[in-house]
Image 1 (cartoon, rainbow, N blue to C red):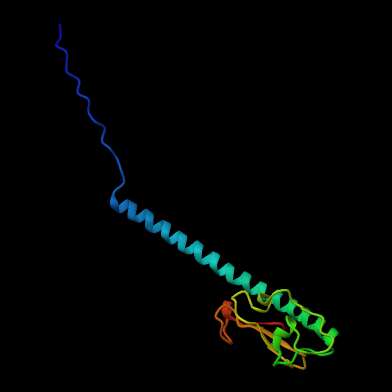
Image 2 (cartoon, one colour):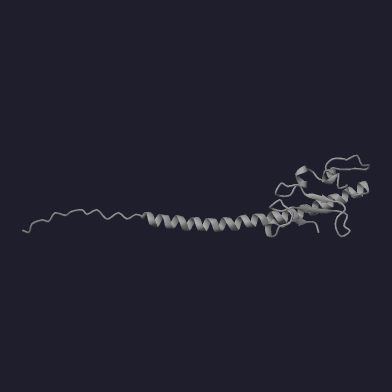
Length: 146
């Protein structure tokens, strides 16, 4: 009879990730997240610019209603607040906008009202854009009702 060999159970080698592999994967995930985040945030500013343009159009319509009732546009001194509360003018039939927030742009900055406007327009409406400063380009460009 042959001797019985003892069978030894060998532990299979446990395989895991090395620190270098984990660092590489985390770096790649971070780069992808930064790229996606940048794309998403830029779209947010572009959407806010479109909202601001629509808002200026709505305020322009409210100013036209004010003129139909009162007979003239608000003075530069009265500003857009004349759309919310009466400034003592006859035939005021407002408020012409529902909330004071409607005369602020999407960046919570007051919309600028100039009366008279440029190029023989009765008024100009201006949102200073994402940077809140006059001028600018790209997403920081001023938005007007022109």
